Image 1 (cartoon, helix red, strand yellow):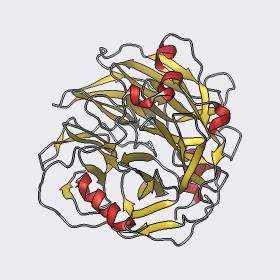
Image 2 (image 1 turned 90 degrees about the horizontal axis):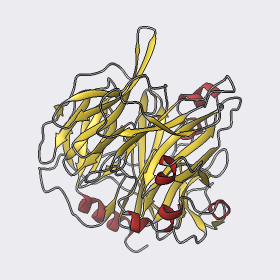
Image 3 (image 1 turned 90 degrees about the vertical axis):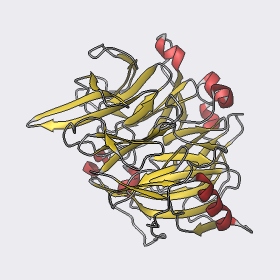
Image 4 (image 1 turned 30 degrees about the vertical axis):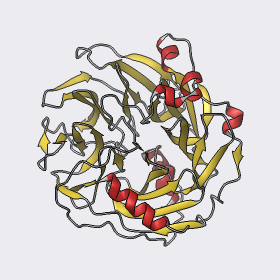
Amino acid sequence: MTSFLWWSRARVGALVAAAGLAAAASGCRRPPLSATTATDGPAGSSAEHGHDAGRGGPDVRTDTAATEADAGSLSEGGAPDAARADTRDAGPDAGSDADQSAMVSLPSGRLVPVSGTLDALAIDGDGVYWVTVDNQPWALDAGSSTPRPLAPAAGLSVVCLGTGRLAAAGDALFWTATRRDDTTLTSELHRTEKRGTDVVLVAGLVYADPADVVVDAEHVYWNEGTGSNDGRSPGALVRAIARDAAPGTAPRTLISVSPFDLIAEVAIIGQTLYWVDVGVVGTTVFIPGTQSARLDLLWAGQSAGAFVATAWLVRGYRGDLYGSHRIDLWHQALLRIPGDRSPSVDLAPIDGADEIVFIDDWALVSQPSDSCGNPKHALVAISITQPGTVVHFADDLATPVLLGDMLVFGDGHGQLHLVPPDDLRATLLAATRGR
């Protein structure tokens, strides 16, 4: 299992480290990642699977494969009732291991060597994209085995949690680069064409850690700020700009939070913006509050947001919301908030999450571990139809897992893995047969 230090830092970043919280580790180990190289094959099944479409998707980044119609009442009204979001059915004991768990190896996939250290991934129908820790964007075109750089490196990143800072949309990538130039901290939003033209779309961003970038059909959204000590300035912001804006265009501020808070995550699900507001100044106990607001109301200046759940991260699938629910100081669980407004339920204990993607009736949760500067991730599959059913895959991934035409992730050996979804389905079936 991972330590409390890191899985609480899953979206709060280095601020928790500064708080000096004690670690609580156990000796649970999971099977190592398979390193077998498979021959090139088809891009995988087109059968139903979901993913964080901001790191992938056919054109726009949202955090669900569902359309607005699929999202149902959640996209129409923003958030479920706050009271209902905190009223959960009795699920598995989130303070103990799930009753129905299995430990298996990930299926073998195609391996692609990469240059540099992977930091953020995105995937869509055109290929796989990533930004390295020295802020260089790369692309692996669909059907290719040779990565290509899209722009020169912009300098070493100083963001601890930057796995969400890259989004693919249409013909371009949008990503933030934060680096230190001598004694000056520089942060900017880039727009990089998939064919290689890179521009700084917005310069002078306020330092943010974690850093998230998401897109919809017309705009790109990101968070800035890590809390303010002056008691007057907003602690953090969500800002937005048109995807096709000219460099230097002033962005629009849509969300601002208390001077003592930061925004730990941003997501778009259907036509709704979600963000995680966390108080960080003057406290060592960090409690996330996921908020939401309809995008049309935000652009019209008519919404301040509504409480959704005490969760670090939210994703959407089949009209429901899923999140990393903070139960108490030591425990988290994968939470499902049904779109039909029936009671929410904790599906299984998790050690935090910095990505959740979906395939059929499974949620694939990437759990962060280790420390800033040496990130590792454990992958678990949790049944969304049978609470408590868990398959543990691997604990030595270097990036969170994404899912498009392929299951994609980086390992700690400078390789990108591309696993056909049908191979993953077969592994899940074998691991749970007879249960």
